[in-house]
Length: 193
Image (cartoon, helix red, strand yellow):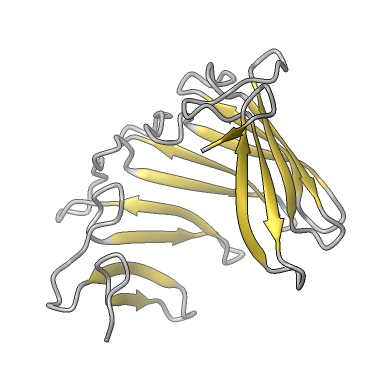
C-alpha cells in the first residue's frame, strides 16, 4: 500500500444512509495524519435533504475545537435546489474567522450559468464585508465548461494582484482537452513564475 502526502488509508464511519460521519487519515504505520487545519478526526453533518452542511473539528468531549488555522467549522451552503453557493469558516463561538492561507472568511458563488458553474466569486472578511485584499473573482469557461480564465478584483472592482503577485490565471489543456496546467499573470500581463 502506497502513501500519498503521508496518507495510506482513510478510515470512515457512516450512518444508516451511508453518509460519512467521521474521517481519519492514517499512514502506513496506522498513525493518524491530521488535515491541514491539524484536525485528526473530521466530523461531517448533513441537512434533511442529505446535503453536507459542515466539516467540524471536535475535542474528545464532543465540543467544537479550533484547529491551527483558527477555525473549528467549515459550513457549506446550498439553495433549495441543492446548488452549492457558499462556504464559510467559523470559530468555536460560531463567528466568521479569516482562513490564513486563503485570505477570507467566507466565499459566495454567484451568477450561475445553465450548467451550474458560477461566473463570480465574492470573498468576505470576518466582519461580513468584502475582503480587503481580494474581494471578487470573475471566471470564464470554455465551451465544454472547463475553466478558461480566472481574474481577481478589489472591493471597488479594480483589477489587483494577490500576495503572490498574480492577477489572472489562464488554464491550459492538451489537444484531447485534458487539463495540463495553469499560468499566472500579473497586472502587466507578464508571466509570474
